[in-house]
Amino acid sequence: MGIKLETLRPCLSFDGDDYIVVSTNVKNIINKNSQYTIEMLVYASVSDRVHQLLQRAPTSADRHGLAINTAGYPTFSHYDGTWTAVKGKKSVFGSWTHIVAVFNTRADMRIYVDCEAGVSGTYAYAYPYADIMIARNSTYHDDGLIGNIAYVRIYNRVLSEGEIQYNHTNPDDPVKNGLVLWFKMNEGGGTTLYDVSENNNNGTIYGASWIEFWRDETRRLINFRHNLTPRELEKIDFTLLNTDLNVGQRVRVKRGENIFFEGVVYERRKRHENYVSVDAVAYSDLILFDRHVVYRVYQTGTKAGDIVKDIASLEDGVDVENVDDGPSLTTNWAIFQFLFGFKH
Image (cartoon, rainbow, N blue to C red; front, side, top):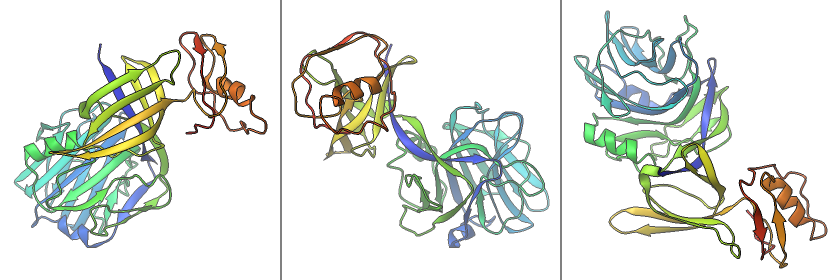
């Protein structure tokens, strides 16, 4: 059974009434006489309802909408007096879905769900909002998104299937040609979404909450080593391709559904060769300080927080009030050498 490496990332959570507004000139790209591509990573958490993802209408007779319908099919719709639409494969409620809508002409609309092309389908209603509305309800219906969004990108051209596949695999290093809006959503707080495409097409958040999610990095993992010996701190060394990673960021490793490592990135080295990669070292949560040599044996089931508090007691004046319980030991753990002063 292979491993899965995940990193903790910020995203926005919507409760059906929350939304994002983009009122800059980028909205003018979304019209029936233009070509454009919309790309999103979405998590719809409730079934049997419509989830609006993006709506925009230059006029009431030129409406564009991207939504997930009540049956779970992502749907890309256009209205110019009559509706036409394409739908993608059925998404799974309660899981992350990569959705791309491509508008070449009204007669050539396409949708891709996790890189699989869609087919002709039934439209989802879209309200004629003059600004770009992300996750907002369609005014007459209770259909705002209930779920999360990890990123949004808009291009002023049609992306090819190969480019869509590349973006799906490399969310931190997408195709840049034609990219006019990119909400990376790495702010982690506040009510402004900054456009990292450098086109200043910032968005305003209304009501949505900042949360975190574990993003699977396994497809970008090109090197991995796990070190655990009685005389060393538990750590992992790994290399990720085309991935943003920062010191202090949380990382975990799973085998099947079991988490066998969770910790924090302590070192990061960015390499530039024929591609960009990040070498990183992460240490387990069971480490905190750096000065004494001690001997301790902790039994299976002991919480990481209890271990931290126990070790911290060897040093006067250490504040452990906000130490979380953390994961539990799955086997007995003997510490032969513990360096205090190391802090995540």
